[in-house]
Image (cartoon, rainbow, N blue to C red; front, side, top):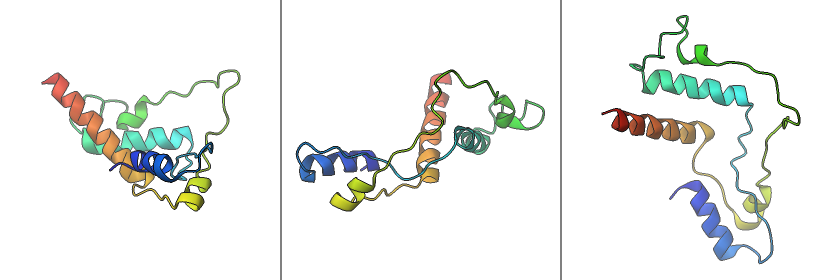
Length: 116
């Protein structure tokens, strides 16, 4: 069962009525770190994609375009899931890396099916 579903089930069956529980894996990353990791996974999982090596010899990372922050842009995104961990004993099974890999792999597989 997926981490998020396990957490929701735990909150629904063992959480205190009226309480709020944040679900997260304590994996804070900057946006650029996430995008770069996705690019690296695409290089590995979709090496025959036209963008894999086409852009200045640096592949998918060569597609990254930096833009100015929009007004009111959040400087940081983070979830404190410590209440869920301490009160209900929840811990994620997936790491950031393994979860992102599964997600990117699934998307690549789906897009291959659409193209076929």
